[in-house]
Image 1 (spheres, rainbow, N blue to C red):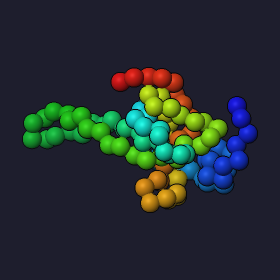
Image 2: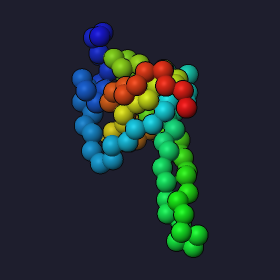
Image 3: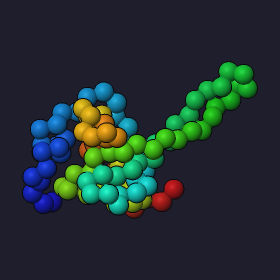
Image 4: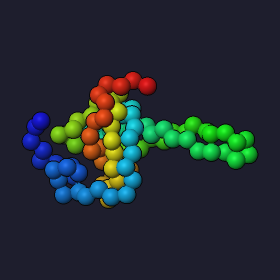
Length: 100
């Protein structure tokens, strides 16, 4: 593991985590220190008495010490607003290189 000088890292930096804890699949990690994470969830539809599968994509801060790649299954934690689109940070890699 490398030294982390990122002030926005939830593990080594000054940013605190709060609220939601999620896990999802990294779809894209092309941007610098940012990863797009796809989160799958289900909701119950009362009319049809069935569950609907849905997903959403969340932009998350990807610290240099974690450096998640596309295809990794990661854990996310909610933080304060880090930029216009980022309110989550990656806290760890659950399974590296998982393709769904």
